[in-house]
Amino acid sequence: MNDAELQKKLSELAEELEVTGVSVGVLFDGEERYAYHGVTSVENPLPVDENTLFQFGSTGKTFTATAMMRLVEAGQVDLDAPVRTYLPEFKLKDEQVAANVTVKQLFNHTAGWQGDLMDQTGDGDDALDKYVAMMERLEQVSPLGETVSYNNASLSVAGLIIAKVTGTTYEQAIRDLLIEPLDLDHTFFFPNEIMTRRFAVGHTRHDDGTVTVARPWALPRGNAPAGGISANARDQIAWAKFHLGDGTAPDGTRLLSSEALESMKQATVEMKGSAIGDAVGISWLLRDVDGVRLVGHGGTTNGQYSEFSLVPERGFAIISMTNCGPNGSQLNDALGKWALEHYLGVVDADPEPILLGDEALVAFTGRYETIAAVCDITADAGRLLAHVEIKPDFQAMLREAGEEVPEEQPPFVLGLLSTDGNEYVVAEGPAKGMKGYFTRGPGGEVTGVHLGGRLATRVESAPTP
Image 1 (cartoon, one colour):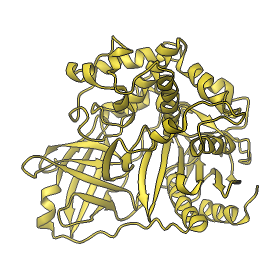
Image 2 (cartoon, rainbow, N blue to C red; image 1 turned 135 degrees about the vertical axis):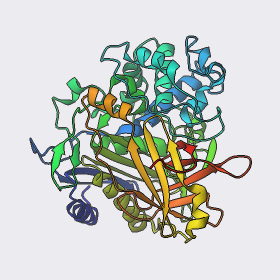
Image 3 (cartoon, one colour; image 1 turned 120 degrees about the horizontal axis):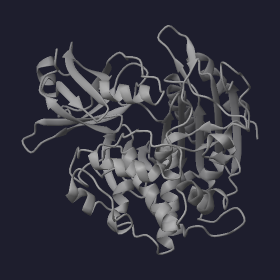
Image 4 (tube, one colour; image 1 turned 90 degrees about the vertical axis):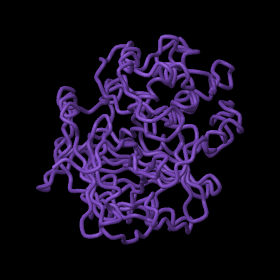
């Protein structure tokens, strides 16, 4: 059904934030509500409508996890078994981790190795095998099972397990286990399926205000289990209804027991203060807001940003898919907060930072690194400034794949939330409200920072000039 207030709010935000196109769905009181705004592409503009397909990125991890749960209930996979039970050839740089990592740890982001391997391994049915084989070069960032650090690569391992156990490709297994039983007839993996339908392309908004199409359009096939699916808003709401339901398909066929479906929403590891939530279930990201638990996920691909949130105790869902960055992410966040308050009376307020002197802030300054980026944190006028740069070798890899290298962004302003200084919130700019935290060693020294859900390890006590 149409919802005039939802449409009005969506259009206001899209025009204010200059988002190229957006598709939104809400499930409230058992009724589906939709709103759309903008166009699919600035080069070949078509109005965004109920049939428009958007990439929804990492929300696809919940498809991988749900398919795995079907195999678990069929007795074909054990979540607590080592990965090598199903992939005997699995290798990492750390042999002990490769031998001991479990299937469940692939889904709760505690595997601990470098998680942003984005190498192109081709479009063939062996792309996933080749991708996982390349992981033998990955360094371990944190001990296995010790901390949450967002890990795309671990989902490709999970996808390969699904492919091996079912004896088909990952994509076909997801079709057989989920897409076809749930009648998701506007949900697709491959560009040659999508290009014959109305679909959104990603865009990049530049510092001078111009907007260009983001290329390439598709993720490498080896990353598909981490987020390579596209859908329209109605299919995303159908996915929400399944996860708010009892495990049966629309025709009454049981796909999962209600207990298994519910177990996916239960915390397997806590991560209070992270940008991605307070805990992780089986792929679902969990956070507590104003007395209710939100279960959700978000997604980012090249110029497309999505958000998917459930409030199970209220039978509520909102999905939002945009095709312009970084302002599309801002729209998703603002619309989600509005919807929680408008429909449920739930207020998702940003926490207020406290002020500390520069002398106290020195303990946090330094250089931090992930596989893809360097983060220099400095103290200035009572604030922590985090300046993030993509590493040259990762920039080269993006260029080789035909992707745009993100423009240099102004520093994030980090506001600490307590005198012990472990948790922070981004206090200004496009990422305002994003939370994170610092990790500490046995002696209380700062050893890392969670930024955007990823653990960056401290490598220097002061930034390199």
